[in-house]
Image 1 (cartoon, each protein chain N blue to C red):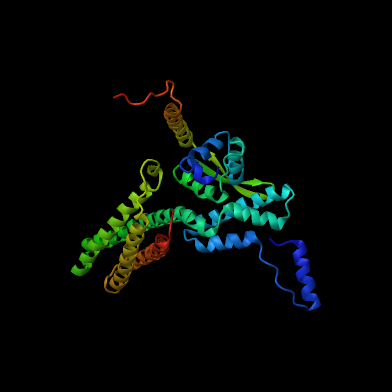
Image 2: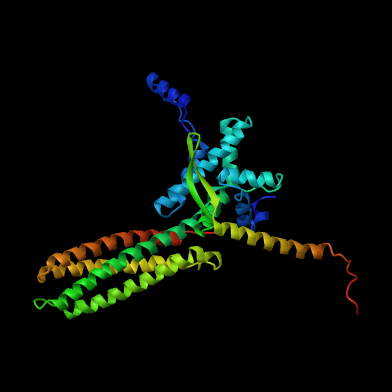
Length: 241
Length: 114
């Protein structure tokens, strides 16, 4: 915690040109930074958790200082009361891993069906148009991509249910975040292939604006799902309590 | 008595102290300590993940509230949280009755007869 007195000291040292030994880091700042560094998860959930930890520590310090304990000692006591970061990180990570699995599931649930809808749009257009048809290989690829997307959507729905209110009565499967991570990865690869095929197709079909738009949507879906799935894989590797 | 001693009852304790109204994290710890006459001492770090889990399960809801110059996350019971608390209380009563009747039997046991 920086103080006005601390700033004056630094300014005074700089003005006199003398180098003083750096002040030891504030125990609360150091503790929060150490804990935050060891945690992985959705940025909003993580920053909320870290803010709450910081608040809790500040409240504990305030309680000790009100009782007459000097700040430095109060900060050390607050950190000790809180528990060591190594001991607590798996407990905090458990919630963050579930939050990340839910985040990835939502990303897959929202973006994959959207991209599939684009695929179906293209397919329908090809059947309606006498001027161009999808190549047979592209049609087969479409079916496989739809299958991947369908699996991802089903798992997303299961994940959101199993980690939400249903978890009051049923235990959350331990390997669910890992399953979500790899299904999300598969879906993101499918979306990347879809984007590539659609953009390639736009060169040869007359209705190229539709193909380009669908390709851009598939590429955006890939970016969203791939990023979330990568973080989910990292979370799933971390120990949890 | 520290956190290890209340493991398994943490959810019930948190729901119970939030029953009268919304509280932030540190106030929840203080309330548990005060209600137990200082016998129950929760480790500060353990309650934040527990509060977030209870919120995910729909038993609590939370919001940032301004307290003086600071903002704090305050938690309060939902309707489902109140039902869950009632369930926890019933389960606890049944448990203590059962244990009590073994530890303090109305009629002292005379042992197995042959």
